[in-house]
Amino acid sequence: MHAVIAWWDLTESGQSAESLRQVLRDEALPHFAQMPGLRVKFWISDPQTQRWGAVFLWESAEAAAAATPSRIGALIGYPPVFSSAFEVEAVTEGLFGDPALAGRGLAFGG
Image (cartoon, rainbow, N blue to C red; front, side, top):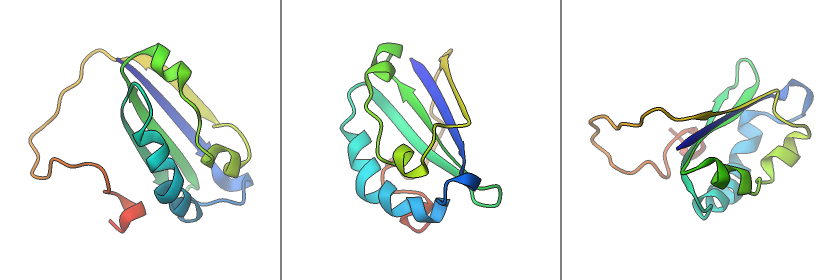
């Protein structure tokens, strides 16, 4: 397993977490839902500090390297200010009531 974290500082881009949510719902989610080798991706934001990012969990480093980016990076206008890749030591899931992760988060109203 392979993890990738990417963070943007949006202060110079003219974009905000709010302005990117529509593209996230309409384009990025369907794009990554069909991505070979991607186990899970979650988008993260901190509107107070104008940060936007993503955490990816891939089946392999090769799958991560073969991925095609979504249009959000182009809309922001520059590469992430932080990006790093790691090998995953272990994965577990806790106890939860709702098994579905898709369709959850601020981009969907909560």
